[in-house]
Each structure stands twice: as C-alpha cells, then as structure tokens.
Amino acid sequence: MERIRLNKYLASRGICSRRDADKLIASGTVLVNGVRAELGTVITEADEVWVRGKILEHKDASDRFRRVVLAYYKPVGVVCTERDKHADKIVTEQINYPVRVTYAGRLDKDSEGLLLLTNDGELIQKLMKASNHHEKEYVVKTVKPVTPEFLKQMEKGVYLKDLDATTRPCQVKGIGPYTFSIILTQGLNRQIRRMCEACGNRVKSLKRIRVVNILLEDLKPGEYREITGPQLEELYHLAGCEM
Image (tube, rainbow, N blue to C red; front, side, top):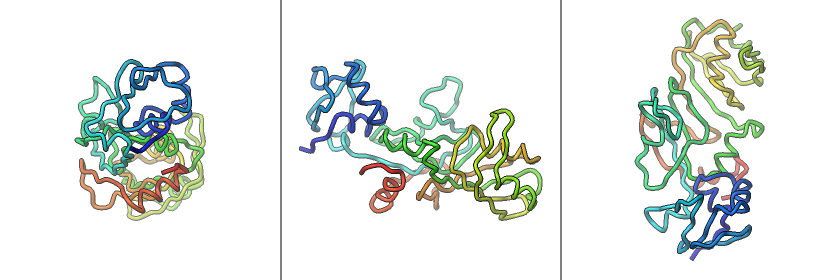
C-alpha cells in the first residue's frame, strides 16, 4: 500500500496547506484509527482519518490519495463559495465528481470562464498567493470604445481609490473596438472591473481564458475536464508544488 505523510494527505484533500496541517495535528483534533495523530504520522489507504470529529470519507479507496485538478467553465450566475444561503447556484454544487474538489482562485458572480478546481490544498495555496505572480488571462468587453490611451493607462497600473491600492503593471492588448485582453499576476477583488471604472469605462462581459498554463480551450459553460499527464506536471512545476 502507498504510504503518505498525514500533513500531505490533509493538504491533498483540500483541508488546508501542509503547514496549517501540522498546526491542526499539533492541536490534537486529528485522529488516525481513533488515536490522536502526532507530527510526522504516516498513513496508508487502510487508515481512517478524523478531523474535528468528522471522518474524511471517500467513495473509493483508490481516490483517497489521488490528486485531482479540473478545468471548469464557470457560467455567469454561479458563485464561488462553499456555502451561501443567498446564492442560487454555488460552484461546489455544480460539479458532479466522485472526489470532493474546491476552487483555486475565484471568479465573481457576473464573470465567466476558466476556474481550476482541486482537492490539493497546497496547490490552492500556491495558486492564490499573490506574491507568486501566477498569470491569469481574460478577454473583456466594455461599454465604451477601447482607446490606445485607455490601454496604456490599464497597462501601467491603476490606482483603485476604494481599495487604496495601485495595480501591478500588466499586459493589455486591444482585440476589437470594444474588446481587449489582459494578463494579471494578482487578484484584487473585482480588479478588472475596478480598473476599467477608474479609467472611465465599464465592463460589459468578462471571461477568464487561462490560469498559468491551463487554457479554457473548447469547454462550454458548465463543462469541465480533468487535467492529467504533462500538462498537470507543468502546472505543479510552475506553481512551485511537489507532485
């Protein structure tokens, strides 16, 4: 049977990062086969793991240690949250997949496009950490025409008064009278919408088409595909994670 360190297993299940898993284990709230786990504990597929009084269930023993990454086309109207009684559609309820996954980086309710979903908590932490400068690419349609002056202003960085922050310089390219592409390496709240408004324009539609090396490709709204093979290995390498 494959053996795996408990902190790595908790991270692979999307519970938390490896570092936080060590803190969780040290707190005494993680049990293995009914016994309080210790730092450095190693488990196999045959072991039962409990966290804060709840067993980590799995539908198949072979799924327990398998890391899963999905490319999902999030439609407009789906909310990136684990639970929200006010949301009509939440992303974790839209995916019918045998392994529990959650999102690595959000898209707001009014935006659509590529969302990575995974059961690997460490990968989520790496992808969402702004200091890692991972690229995310979008295609944006605006209410007013896209002018050369607008593109230059967006590209050099925009001061967002309500967040009291200036965006990082980014790559921006006009691709139509009312359409441009933009590549960001940070993820401030509703960043592109705020940037456009600060530059005197407004977003009509926003679609994310790439996260690091993963492309939306020919997915339709609501569809997903599993990332495997060399593409998955490259994602882990670029994210700075161990496979």
